[in-house]
Length: 257
Image 1 (spheres, one colour):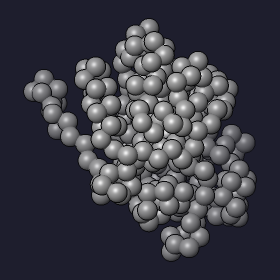
Image 2 (tube, one colour):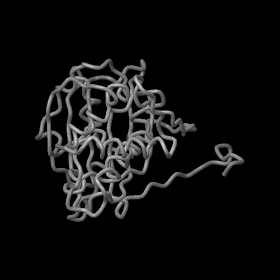
Image 3 (cartoon, rainbow, N blue to C red):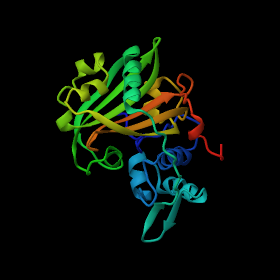
């Protein structure tokens, strides 16, 4: 199964990359992207051991590496807590133009629906979407193609009351943004985060790239005019096939650039 946050799911035992480093990279990517925010607890050695099927020594080494690079702090009887806190300067944009652009992009690419399920969403996805843990959502995983080659995988979470138009058939022919808008609620804004991450084995297989290859992850949390959550998308694009361009105005530039 392809995870919504590249979540601790698997390691590639065929690669020369050490197992502890693969675990370290997955955890680091989640921390840097904000999926594991400042102050949150990281899985224990035993939890990592059970999840990845590795020894506790391997799990401990991954956590020690995170601590060594100042991503986490480890304390006895307290656990391992994220201390990394990256200041993010938001980029403001016209949400109407942004939605139109995304819909156009969706129509120009071919889509294969990999998964379509209903589930109770948990953190960190629940926090990103803006709903309490345990909220029922529709989860859709789609593989996007361009010119006959995989371009990216998009994982979408939609609150269940807004998902009645979403089916496997409708996802193949209509961008999910349009389907959610058909619920009658109008988009009011969105928060976007862009991060560089590494492909886990499941994501690498879907995109036909090497495990640990670089990906561009774009997370967008959409809300309606009243500020209520409507849609969360997490798109993972191949770094060799996808680029983003921003046209900056003079008043948006800062001295640190």
